[in-house]
Image 1 (cartoon, rainbow, N blue to C red):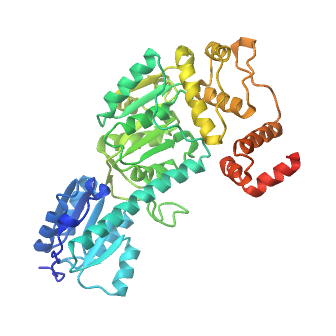
Image 2 (tube, rainbow, N blue to C red):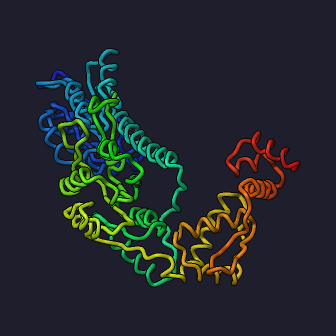
Length: 460
């Protein structure tokens, strides 16, 4: 019998508590050696969350978390055998990062501080009302979701890359109609998808469309450019690490698989993965578990994996640069994106979509496409595919016109140095803002002081 046997106060009406969207999708584990508390929390949570399990000791809890993923653990502190804090400290040391709420009837400031140091997200005193524990759960789940979203946004900003448009697969060609059909079919299943195609053919947009149409859509989409991460740190980036795992590992850290938990991990430029990591990725796909660097514990994951490459993986396998077993494990459902030159009927809708997006971003009125410009666009081979087309539209919008040349059908904008392009762009934005420099600076993403200085240089 637990020494922590204070019962919960259930006098408030659970029906008065609004449903929480994160709780509705959560998998929760209750660890408490008092049957009454386990029964109360199970009755409270079962109608409100996706799954709840309740056990009376940490050994049973350990077996459950080794077998499947939980979004949150509600952990009693004073139990027979070992305390919840001792068990939590061991979990954190092994690289287990799931949110934990500690509940106890016997608490003082020292215990609260120890709980925070051990990695507890919240601390709830018994007896508690239904609303109290549900509010604590909601706070933990909200914080975890926000932390993951912020992490993904920081990575995108750190990459200094233009974010891809939301999952819009634009085009009227038969090839694009077929791709949209394949995306719809694949999205409904958890199957790993391999996307192939030349650089600039919108592989990430296709991956996002898969995610947004899937049961994983409410959880994170985490894109990873495998070529942009140094070989010596990519294992830690993907799987996380524990404190002291290597020189400089001053604290434990979650990996990208953890941040994609419940959602989609998109591995772009997959062929760039080191061979040693390819073997570990294969094991992750097969076992649905990751092992943080330096840890003895494997952590279950619930992640949809989408991979993409512009390389010929068959050739890479033959050359010994890519593992054959990983290739066959990934190549279950393939979506190949044809180059833009093979579907010229998609050029006009793509160009118009890019014009709409970029003009809104820059605060400039869209430029019209005359028939001659579109004819030249359709005749050009676009070696950079949709990405090159987008850049061409953006440049034309900044310059204020498409000057279409005759050589090889290529769309040629007039040549100006960077300073002149910058001047024309900034003055056009200022004009569209009605001369309001504060508004123009906001649209340009620069400070008012910078815009004032530029205008002074140009006598504008």
